[in-house]
Image 1 (cartoon, helix red, strand yellow):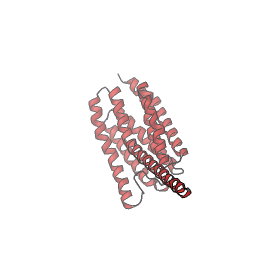
Image 2 (cartoon, helix red, strand yellow; image 1 turned 90 degrees about the vertical axis):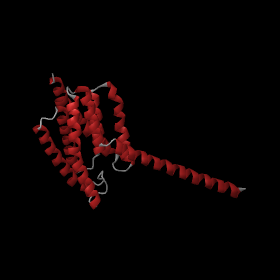
Image 3 (cartoon, one colour; image 1 turned 90 degrees about the horizontal axis):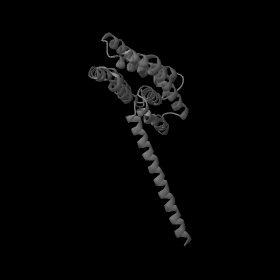
Image 4 (tube, helix red, strand yellow; image 1 turned 30 degrees about the horizontal axis):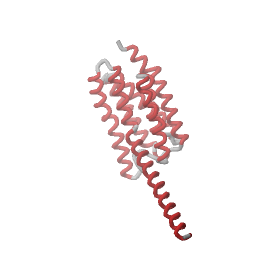
Length: 225
């Protein structure tokens, strides 16, 4: 009788362990999906598209430039980072080690600055120019910080994008703020960042968004006839 009870108890313990392991695996899979889907690249496209639909005087022209400029500015840095992963310089696309972020971030910033110069030269719609400038400013700030301390680019990007939409578009975009804790959880769950690094990234994104919206974006929208 006692041996049967002991066997049943062990079986229950093993089953419970398997359930917990499966639950942890599902958490990791969900966290990976969140990190991939709510990534800085997609957020930039979605944010600029939303502002274009709401505020551009010529949405078709703005969308044309948006879908032309985004691949031109994003694909070369992405290809370069993937090449660094292929050569073994980086562990993966999201650059988990702080000490080897300087090279890819520097190249990315230089490429984006060159893109900004070309945007000005071709007189691209101001919404595209402003969003591109915000991205360059955010990446430059985070790149400077990451020389001394690892900070979450994901958290900063989602914070900047959602805060911008809330400040400019208003109430309909309030639910998007839920993405901030969701993305923060995913980065901590994947052990890519600590809670402090995620919070710092969110605060950095908030500051950049408030400054750009208050002093650049909203004055430009108000000045547009």
